[in-house]
Image 1 (spheres, rainbow, N blue to C red):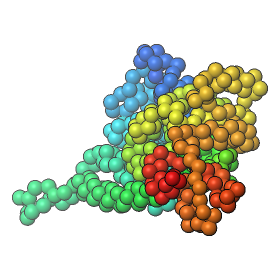
Image 2: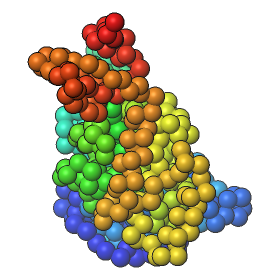
Image 3: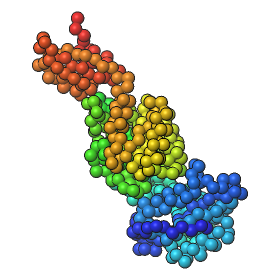
Image 4: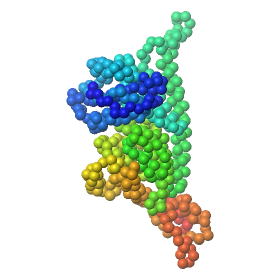
Length: 456
């Protein structure tokens, strides 16, 4: 193992509470395929191994764990029983004892049997990538909906981890005397209880889904388009959301700082108004359990009129992160190549030097206008005007501009126009009539013409 000592230690978090300090000490392991496996020098999804190690440390820090050791573990082949080879398991066991660690985080996917065997060998709790992300989401959930979604994902994960490993989990024999067969085992009882709880949560989340659909239907009745902000976790989505909306959504240099979605109205440069939605950050190998559980929340992205994809331009793996976001968008049924709906933002340009900024600007300038990314800094506000202009351009695309002639005394008609259309201008003409110019979605033109028929 190639150890790297964490640069900073943080307080014990949610995982640490049950054992008061011991469990807070964590060893972070990033398995790295070697040349024998044909994937040397490269992490998952084309990432550099150093970048993977940095992300793994970030995941552990996101839940407040005390990282006592972090390193890369060469892996020629995975072992069915222990994932790592026998010698490496013994080496790591010595490290865990020396550091008095109560938790080992393996940045990969462990089977239930591998997890159980490693816990026995190391004398510490073992979490894989999915398990730790579920712990982070559990600590971040603040709303009832968020808590339900996390619990559903956690129960589905736990269901696969109920491995029969102790004979004392079998209850007393059923029937009378010695003739009865074995009764229900503790594992079977746990599985039944988990299945019952999953069904109850799924019923509650169906109610959440119906409520969200009603809210979206209400928003469709007013002329406000929805703009969803998406991106890799820690790309600066919440900082951008706060900059645009003057909100106070939690924005920190921390993975998954935002979990529950937030919506705010924003006025665009030429008078249009849009509702912006901040969403949970995406991640490479984001557990499908979470994508499924958070589908009700992520449907805000599916239903959005414009999607703002925020990328961390200062990150060494920005391209790989963008690919991960595109993969998740496809899983949700969104085409990441739809330039008429997607705005790409290269954020954090304040973190890179002048030469790198000029290079990025040249790359962006060579793209077609409809796919050209916006270079900006959500922290300083640089490029915000360009972003709002790009959003408005997509919002108004395909909308018709109509001129109407109204009686100035007809306040109800003018109020209706403000609710159902985008009123661009209004003025009194020489005949004392009110000339109103509106921009309207094509689906509403028929209703508008019926209410305001053209003058004969």
